[in-house]
Image 1 (cartoon, rainbow, N blue to C red):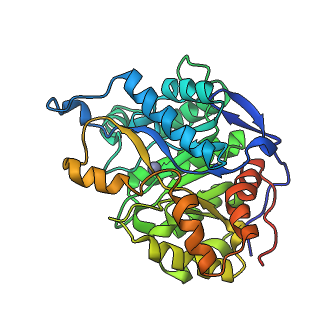
Image 2 (spheres, rainbow, N blue to C red):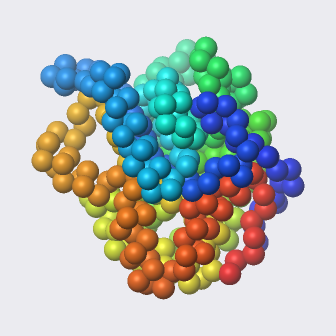
Image 3 (cartoon, rainbow, N blue to C red):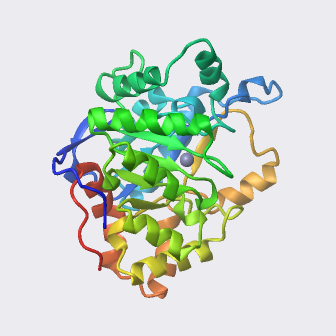
Length: 338
Ligand SMILES: [Zn+2]
């Protein structure tokens, strides 16, 4: 049923402030962002950016709110080309005593830094150079920061995986096979995760080392079960983004998976962004309305009660928030469904 599972397991996970025992992850959100900036934001000269101290304050405040809800750790899977700021992550982690895991990777073609990498490829740049960069960031550190990534990020857009994105999937798979690092993905509105899973596993990545992200963007039970049968984790990681999908639909989809015995296959998050480069959401009122629920404590505050109302147990919720992130990073085999 599932693809061949690696027998080797990892006892530690790399955070921005150093390796920690996987058993110390505790309650973990698997997809939140301290800071995101789209390529091109630097051209928006009408925007007044927050300074570093302001960003630091916002991020520390969010982390303190998460800690107050029993959260110990998070993954910020910002790819290299969306303004990933490991200096900010490190400072926030140090100030709060909170575990932050960062990623290496490149974003999807339509919103990432593809202009640079495609220009470079035209002049002889090779996908192997990208793999080399990922491996260096995973094993030695990002630039000269000494901060190591703990996971590889990949992303695809719509309506199909582009040639550029396919190249990035293979570069990520090669780096994963070489280093044993796991992979987390972006899917647009919960489509093409099945193809991501196939491409990555055919390139040698064990399916249980992959999270198919934004799977809650789909309410197709067959699609979800296909990913489960393929042996990967599903990211229900956009709770609170009402403009993409109402939470009621995400909850209904998740309850169906729990009823089908899939609690061990789901990780939780919000894809919340705490600080932006530029102002990609131009209407301040729209931002304010979104931010009421698009917070990293929304799942625990408002979604858990909805799930319990629908029959989810404390054990299932704890499995998704605690046990699954630990098992995912350890590389342990998946338990049987049910
Ligand atoms: Zn994200």
